Image (cartoon, rainbow, N blue to C red):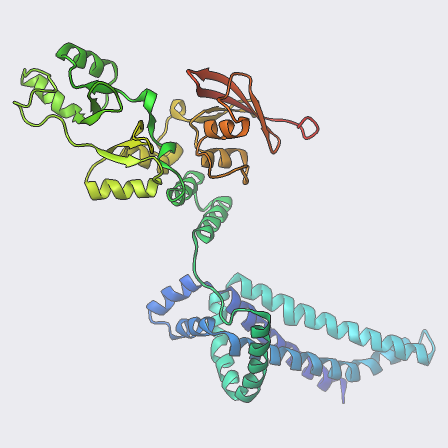
Length: 435
């Protein structure tokens, strides 16, 4: 066979192998979301690609048949066509026997390099850069080849299915999109600068609603401002002036005897009408409203459901002994979702200091600490929701000032305790040797 004919045949085989490589990588990398959008717009080729992705077995069988046949033919043609020319050229500097051996090796390396670069790496890179467009270009010819080689496809697929069942492998891939996939995409977008870091945090917070307990967003018991049923007008005026809120809990004798709540707007209207501010007085209409009471084991997602069903935006949280542990509002839940986009610096529960350390409130939720410190695994996870709970579990007692807990190179030191409540914790990164 003449050199020109051999080179033309080798070029044809490389082009064929490049087609199969591009068809394979583009079909595997094509994004279903984009293909679905194109199919909805009426693109028949996008619909064909989606159909192949749903059942890709025959398609990839044809790809492998084509690639292997072309590789074998390329080796045969290349060895017979190029070896004599390499041997003749090398015959000027070595013996005929050595020239023949090195000529074969040179022919093998040349054909291999051409197939690797032109038939594999280049088409695969093209397929990764624009997989949807390339998949739609190649799906037509590939479906025609699939129909032409149907007997061989049926044979090889039967053998593959039997072996897959023997090994316990799934017959079809799982295309379900989980929240982990969405978070990975948003993180990649944030790294690329397409998604703002604050927007990515909001998306993460939305998915955390299913795991965060209401205790991580509530106003704790000792911070709840409430009114007693027997409070006189002067005391009500003083308390409202000192601690202005939109809603006030009303109790009978103590915070655990909850009667309901009063709206600050109702109190203000009574003040404007110069009516007495007496909680027992109902002459001006029902002042005390029925309050929503929920258990402390609810997640924030379940809390949103409770608010929607009850048409309320304020709730009292109680524990298993019916003792009040705090209150929560719809605004508290939404502030958890929005994170730093709505919280001022003074309201942040964990603040980074200039020296790289962190100062955190005891009620800082564990997910916030996880993001700030990069700690993925927490010991005895599920037994606590906040930093204070973590310290209690690790120390097996109520934390005191100067108590220290070490975790993955971070030093948690209690710096302030207020009536058995962990108020402030200093978190410092320590060298590995010191840890």
